[in-house]
Length: 252
Image (tube, rainbow, N blue to C red):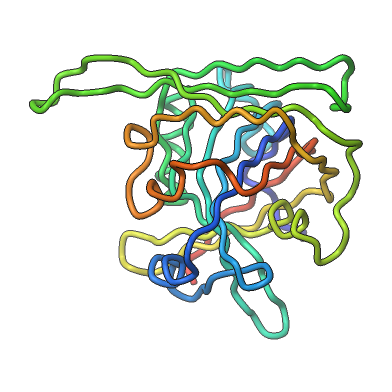
């Protein structure tokens, strides 16, 4: 009997801003049993904004939680099982506007979800992304004083315009390296590793232009990765997304 996915959804209108990091940082932090996944010897982290739509848990919609935005920070690892190389991601922080989503994901996968107020600005002339369309996601950070009292609220944003026709990335290309991952990994509370599978068709991608990366990094992210997010991304990609299936995690 085929394995039943825990979650089904659509991930669409993705913006991926990519930053180089030393491979040694990934080696130090990668969950047990995984190793850095690199492209041409370089390691990367990515800030990814997208729309989470038509969410179902075991096929059942949860009222009020079927559609929302997410912005996550991730890095890239791989794990070899027999002759299979499983290319995956590790999430450093995932930002969503729904508290229940954060509670469930953190409990099931030991992920790093936080809840923030969010907004988006999607400019599409049709049902599918095309050249000239723009996608932007925003989230609000909370600034606190030295005794923990809230002071200012800071809006952050990442966005980009579709700068070229969308197409399937070439095999072995940088774009394929950034976009095509079918496994997720997280360190568990006992020092082990949780592995889970993500299934989706290959996504079409495009070069991003008119990129906006306006983030108070210190309020949103922690070290060691925060320091690598203070400059401009080394590359930016837009992806159309698709229907996805996320399966139960297991300890390896």
